[in-house]
Amino acid sequence: MLFYLTLFLIFIYFKLARVHKKEERVNSKIYMLHALVLISALALYNWGATHFSFWVVAIVSLLFFIVSALMVTAVQVGVFIDGKPFIKMSNLYKIMPYLAIIISILTVITYL
Image (tube, rainbow, N blue to C red; front, top):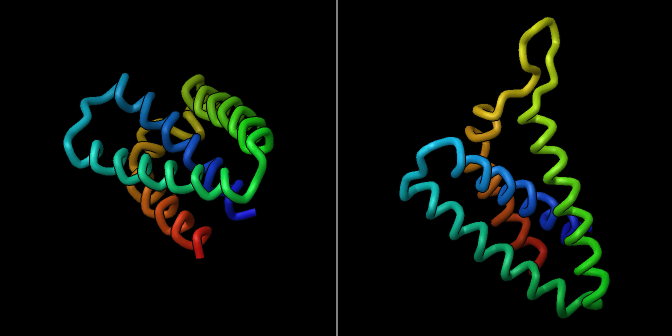
């Protein structure tokens, strides 16, 4: 179960990273976070390939890819309450470092 949660968070992180790169200027610290999450993703896929069949990992990855893209797009379009956006993209950009740390920790726990 932890594998699926971590995989979903990885897809959300990379979708946020893609949008962040298009909208804002990216510095070297952000690239280091992307590298950390990429290493975690590769390790998690390695673990998933050894413990699950290829089809399970591929279908779940496709499903998480679609759901994370829809979630981030919904925030980009905006959910407004009383004329103000409920969640701003800038708020999501601020949590990206914490999300990277959580992904790394969950990947290590998955391996244990």
